[in-house]
Length: 576
Ligand code: SF4
Ligand code: SF4
Image 1 (cartoon, rainbow, N blue to C red):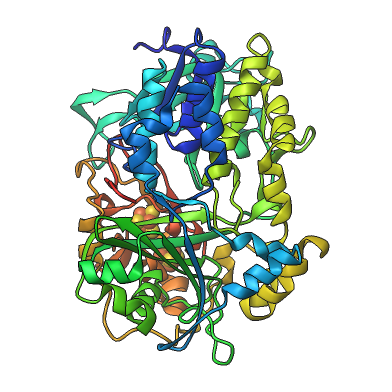
Image 2: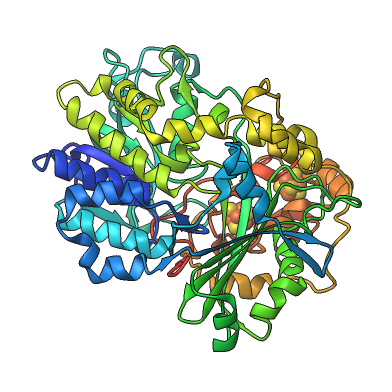
């Protein structure tokens, strides 16, 4: 591909459930148009991590329209092998006591309270890595081009921001930035340069990142996408409330057949309370633990923690350790072998954090649409977003199909379709939930959240602003083994490339953060990327990075920037 001719009708950035659902739906609606999906992961599903419990309706609709008898296929039987029959919502009181409070959720459902949504019975326990692989294969079979190992670093948007340039754009500037001053539209994306050394100098194998031009661009990068956030800034989209995040760390553990049998093949466990909050002693963090069967005598165990935690020495992996040591959990996994690990952020801000065009309210602008987790389509009451990701992909495809000759109308049509879809209902039903808990803390906020959608929108701060000097009082005795965690995530990057992690001002680390907070990035990074080297905090091991982006959102001085490394780097999840 050369720059001048590198042009597709629809470019989808991100081969996750949202992007691939779009590709599949587009190929059903308009088989004649060219659809290209790019993803930075080395292979399909390698960068996808989720709980994951899937509400299957949107997937059914998508595949019913695309593939005859898809339910009979081996892949469908494999991905959708486990339907939830037993639903536990546990409250952990201290290290030993566990109460199943599922009856409260059932009561809430009877009284039509929003918390009643936490019922998962009838949904499917899936591996998002496998689901993604399957959807990618289907998209390819339908004629979409699905390219992995292609990392995009920028979205090209016209018109040029004059405040940064101070003169009229020259022809070469227009070429380089893909400017089209007359139309105010995004014209393409720029891929990452390959073959630079650590200092950024070109090596003999240097290949300049190509520009892929497209009539339509779908941003489906998942949580905190690089291009999505750049686009939000360049196109001046706005959120009513800052996006809030949580950090999820997950392990897949091979257990004995007795343990697996005891746990069950169709049971999901969601636990709140210890070690994130307890009624009397705190520590008062939003989130909880999860346990799902992962098939073949494997159990997935995870911990999700709201990134507005205030403890400067806290690491979500410590909470995971405490969770695994709780008597209820331990009996199912003790003696087991961790075979895969991973970490990821989840966008939790919900309704008020969806980025929109200030004038039109569109979730995107012109021919660019924002999908799935990139838009923040996650319902934290259900702790689910996969179905909305797929649904948003379907709606984006419909919007494009209706506007092939008028790309500039696509984002507004997409937004209308989202408004008529289940996605809008989901977002509305959980509106203000996370803001209420952020405002009042889990102890008061969780009960109050029953009324969240009726309450006024609470002003929330960015997650990084919540950090204090307080210590996490439930720090486990054993240090979490980050080396093994990273090894089990199978993360790899070409060592001789510029670091994709930047500390903006190392003086801030030295003079403010280290004395005040003790350099939290060293503690909370799940992969041990940050270290003190010669008295200076540095991203010393960027090749360990799991692409979770926690550091970018939790450095208390907002002093870290995450960009994409060369395509093909990062974790290699198989069963997440
Ligand atoms: Fe602190 Fe951020 Fe510097 Fe790390 S990068 S030491 S968290 S200011
Ligand atoms: Fe996550 Fe940042 Fe650590 Fe990479 S360096 S694993 S993005 S916290």
